[in-house]
Length: 238
Image 1 (tube, helix red, strand yellow):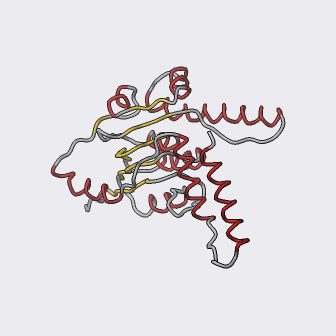
Image 2 (image 1 turned 60 degrees about the vertical axis):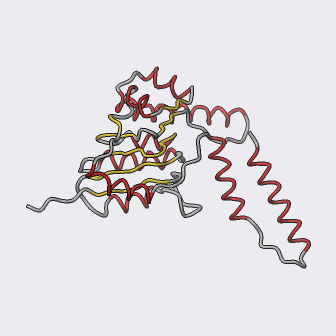
Image 3 (image 1 turned 180 degrees about the vertical axis):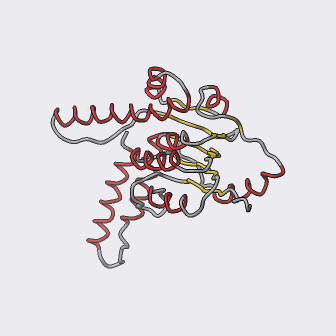
């Protein structure tokens, strides 16, 4: 009987319901790649996180997948990406990788009733995220809640000690071709805080919205300058 070769997929970049900048990971794109074959699969993760609902969809896809799912964190699995990592049959971490968990966040507008609704919603989202962490780590919900409150960053050893990962990746001759392919696919990781994630998105938005100015149109130039000033103010807001 012919044995199905293990497949390798890459989850690099921000997780989103829809792709704004053509480099986001969406549930539909991931589903298409995951279901393009069968058998055991290895998922390389290098992501600062993103939309928690989109991440939940991808988590569920991996939990329902028929074959074994090996998660390899080679850069960062932060925020929503850390939830996806919990779906692995086995979770491996690079010696130089990072894993981060924190409380969910949102933007709300309205009176105190609307604010309370947002607070209640975030509390429920947090509980659903804890479900995934609890299944993987076996840690108490109270302890997991405290770790999320503190925005906990874990290196490879810490992730294993706390139960978020199973072992550290080690180089073998058999792995060398796979590692080289992963290195080629891996995106640049520079997003190590929520503020930097926001700034990165704002930079992309500014690039998308930038108006091509004509030399003889002073009005267009003034509008473009005002728009860029506004985006810069939003980017630097804390």
